Image (cartoon, rainbow, N blue to C red; front, top):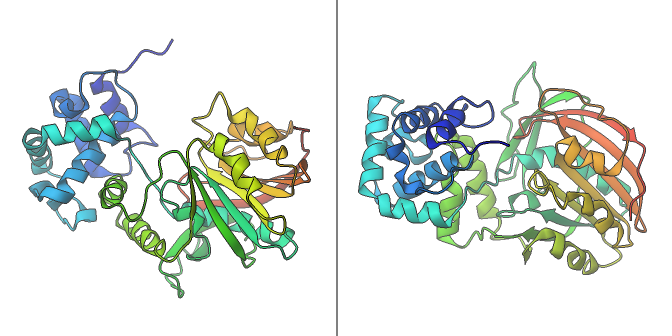
Length: 367
């Protein structure tokens, strides 16, 4: 049985882990400081320690800094700061915790870290284009599971820059509000036009773009150095003013059947999600049959670890064997029966690169 980590262990892991705070020098420094002095994490309370506690505390701290004005902001490029990490960073952090401990504690008790980086749309976009070609002239009805703020429901709003590693980003920006860059490994995917008839968001706790507190909390989850991500999220939120999103608040397993039933027969539903099944250990095996029960043509696109999605619809082995593999998969249903399973690409979990090598798999019968 895995033992519950101590605060010191949780923050040490956050500082050292490859997929935690390692990309943020400021958060690494603060995580090490908290590991050395767990009193700095007092706003988290005295309950059981969880892996989400380091990002929760740092989100709460940034959220408070966004509203009170504090010297800690001088260290956060996302808040206009220019100072590099030094001894003053930890001193400013400790001062904020001491001065605003009650407010931080309230945020840590009532909230959870949130994110919605539009860069994931650069990973999903080629799969949507493939579905558009298969639609045979029917417009698409996008149904996103785990939509957060709905920013990945705007694939036709963003511009895209797919570039080989040898050349790097082109630096060319189109007419859209923001260009999403993605390194291409393997083949270059096609880019079919999208005719989107509707956008349905399935989200347990929607982040409404017109709710200042919800938006502030979303922005506070962006690491201090990630100014480009801040620009992407801000542009996506602004685009929601002109977008029509059909929000279905609640558990997406429960909301999905009704959402599919409400889509007219002349539209092709495209159900998709990004890293949403990893936390659905006891239920994810239900999803292929749940989609089949709709009894209609549709496409299901996933960006997940292969055991969380691909293995649910085929007995063939995962064709991608890279470290920490995440696979972009497309599953086509015709009248409720799976007719095609394609492992489209190995992808970076954060949308930085796409290794497009479509591999047809043998579908498993479901339903």
